[in-house]
Image (tube, rainbow, N blue to C red; front, side, top):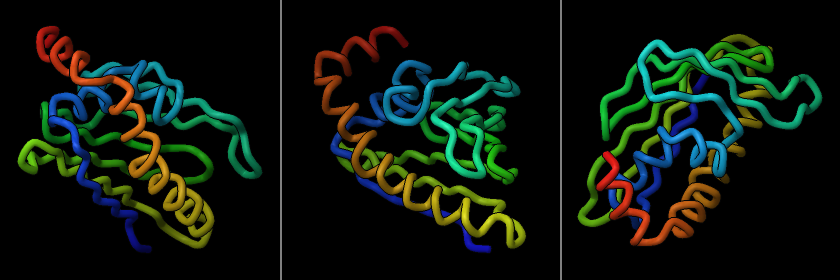
Length: 147
């Protein structure tokens, strides 16, 4: 079954986009509440409202953390056991983000893949940019200072 691949160029510096991927509070603001920590091997949980066939819980583990370029997580919930990869590249003063959600297998993964494909598009193209825009340039400077 095909992977979900979404690419988006965000008009924000890579450090700012990276922070939105690895800071638990920012991740909660655009994706889901969580107990994420940016440590390889850390297991954590995303939680959201349940839906038919989905209890609202995604179990994840940080598999790869290459700051500020690549984050890979396991994504297990709703009957699927998959991987989500975020890859960041500088694009001038902007950042190119490539999300790949892979590992969909069997007929039972068809509906989750369709739902997640639509969800990821909205998250990457609307919610994440809105969060980053709300952070403003002063937040970028404080993020860099805090690293």
